[in-house]
Length: 446
Image 1 (cartoon, helix red, strand yellow):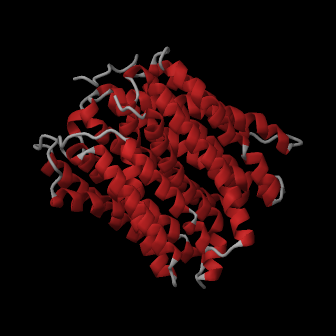
Image 2 (image 1 turned 60 degrees about the vertical axis):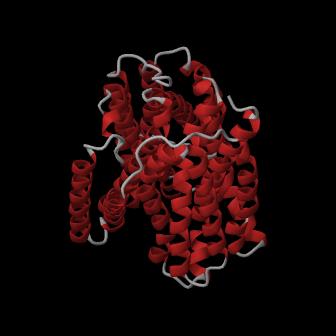
Image 3 (image 1 turned 180 degrees about the horizontal axis):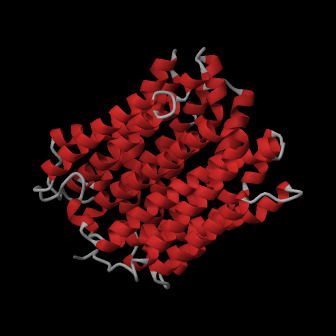
């Protein structure tokens, strides 16, 4: 056991906060970035899209490298790469430069996302894994709630490069604290370059298809087919390896497969809901941006408050039941938000968003705990890669769903329809969790 567990846990949580701050602050700053770099709004969205694509491309390779070279080593490399990408963002003279720098940031962030919980698992006792995952969820929720406010306040007093300069001292602190993280010997077989390239090509094609599905459906279809072909080649090539890039051996576990399916569905619904709600508040209920933003704060705050409770409950209640309860609460909250009322007071949404945050925290903590206990400790990186990929795939699907609804139904109808569909997706997630029928077995010593 690591002699400095508090500092080690702090390093992981601070790195997670760093990644979340980076994404959320850039999201709120997109209009400012488009104006400063003289770019069209549609072109400026590549600042976000490129980062998400890089995350998808690098999650599984970073996880495999962590299992083979050591989790701490690859995690630290990721923080260095993220810091370098942030410095490139500060110096960016053009949109193309900034997009390329965001790709570098995404590659570094992938190592943090893939290996963060794997490192926490080495620091805490197995019976405290649920609590550690809850701390992680708490850090993510609080930084998600604070990021838009921090980003907006910073833009009021400084130029946009300071959005990225802010990451540098925090990254330096993470690197200092990371010295307290436990070291692990080289383990699984190293991933082959061919597999890494096929993985990157498949997920890059998927991200490109998601970005073009509205504006250029034929090109999106072609990219999707190209990505599917590369994924098929990757699976065929990797299935004979002892530690494949896509951990097919771990996917043989039924409980783990159901947890991943449930995660994709839940994040798709959650993302669709968080995109639909601001439009519902502003376009349907006629609220200003500031008031609408305040009414959305209860969701992440509810996640932050519930996460520690969820961590304790996850150690006492069967995963299937806790995920089912959390998914049902989230689905109920989203479904009730989608229903029109005669007066339609905006304040009625506050208890519903609190219910959504409560349900999402219960589901997410229990589901993640089940994922990590479904594999031996030395394969924790692989599980982290799968868990991160499932989350990003779900978020991408939720975003594409809302884009299609806005295109087909218009801004007036799309938010309520989107919330209804989001509730259905989360309900399916809860049902998938209930099919597990119990908790996973802790194989940390297997």
